[in-house]
Length: 125
Image (cartoon, rainbow, N blue to C red; front, side, top):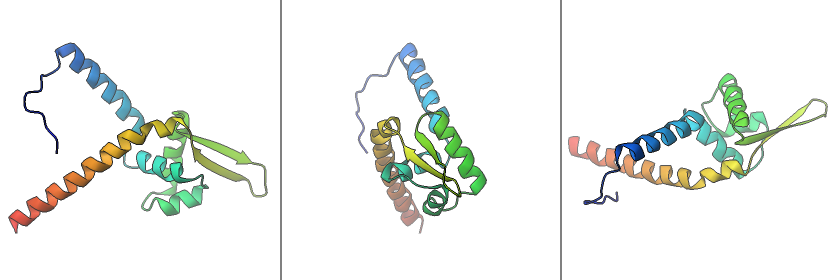
């Protein structure tokens, strides 16, 4: 983990602005499933059942709600094709690709955290 020792702390105004930005971001991508769904759809466009199969553990009801939220925030696009039966395809938008750096950082941090927990468990054994 990278830490700077003599790093100056932001003033109250900068801290408040940063906190507001973080809270705004979390209000849009919070929850257990949103980033997983975005990652699933960035790989390729999919139908509802394909998404549910790939993102294991999510219920149909929660998947429908999360997809609707992601669509409202312009992270995914829902296209309905007039076939029999109706075909609905979900795909990631260009806007969802702006999360690439954030997802990469979260992935790196998650790996570090997992290793920290493993080390802690080894010490306790």
